[in-house]
Image (cartoon, chains in turn purple, yellow, orange):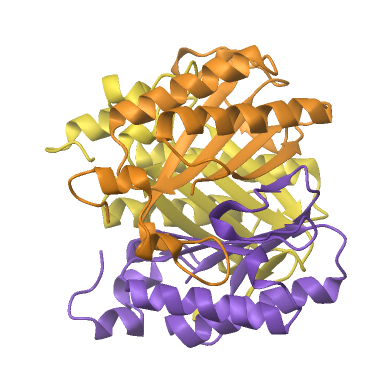
Length: 142
Length: 142
Length: 142
């Protein structure tokens, strides 16, 4: 269910983009318990004038060439601990492949409701069939 | 008031993009009761490597060339039924023109507050003048 | 902490984009009390067919060449008054430089939680260290 929006600096080979796509998806599989195949991403490349990040805010050492911005829209209801695990896993995996410095990875989430998704055919699939992680909680998140 | 973000696969004629723009706007007019002229959209085309969607998640049969992703930012307060009607209308209309397969249309909403909009001149127009659909409800959504 | 997404019409010199980036950041510094260096922006240029805005909705006189759309993702907890000040400041500053007509500036906000940000290294920095503006409030926003 999450929608992932990724902006990166231009000039990378296609394999670099593919690695980011794969790693972010795997990190979400492992920490958010999203099902197999729940992968919807938009990944675009930009010049430094288009993708702007302060080089040192919050004590980081960000680079012009390596900075990656990951924005994830996901259903409400994950705990702070789960979100922290997600951040850690994304950064850890991107360091391994394609080899992005941890200081260069910014992540931000936006939460939406279960009825805010239609995966096709005009149906609101999660209204009739809430995802496993939501059913397991005492109260289904709004 | 809604802001509509649409990503589609590259290689379509301009008329294809225009049809999507028109149909999504009409579907929102009919189901969300947005006023005439409330049309703000960003529509961009992408390669399959940029716009990534699982081919079969949630039982759909998605195509590389036809997949369209629609993200709508709108004010909080619509019922689940209204959202379901919106999904149905968008998919129904896009099937007619420009002729998009229902399995290829993914839609996701993000809700914001009435004070989260400025339509120009630095004014927060909905703070002073809430939209009709919000006034008609018992309680104005936050 | 805010993430700023800006869409503008194509065909402007680089200095035009830089001016928008600077002015929006300064307006946020002055009204949202964000710290020095809290600047994360994506600014892209588009054709009129990609960036669509009704020319007169809500009583504005929008132009094809000048329209700018600003979307800001920020932590929950600002008052309506603060948001109104933000809109005013952005429009006022963009009118001075690069010289954008107030009718051509649309702004929309989306609020997220303090635990929805990781500025690097996979850490959720605001969970351990909430920003000043949030600490000063009686209750830290969720």
